[in-house]
Image 1: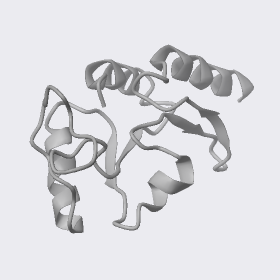
Image 2: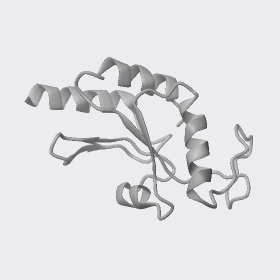
Image 3: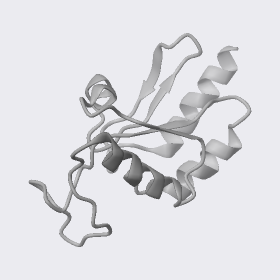
Length: 125
C-alpha cells in the first residue's frame, strides 16, 4: 500500500465508528515474478507458503499501518472475492454488504472517496 500514512490517519480518525482491516494478499510485484518492480522498494519474492506471506505482512505492519491486519490464504480467496490485486479499498456495512469498492489501486483508489463513503454510512445510522 503506497499510502500507509494517509490510510492510518483515516483509520485512527474513524476508529470509533469503523473497523479498519487490511488483508495482505499475494505480492503484486515479487522480485522473482512476472512483473518485478523497476525501481524496487522491497526484495519480496513470491510466497511459496503461508509463513512467507505472514512474514511480509508483519513487515508491512511495522510501517505504522493502523487497524487490524489479516493474511489471505494461499488460495487467494480474499483477493479473488474482491478483485484486489494489486490492492483495493472496500467498505462493508455492519451487515456485511459492500457499500463502497474503489477502483484497483494504488492509482485507482482515493482515500477521500473512502472517507466520504464512511460519512455516508454514519449519516444513515
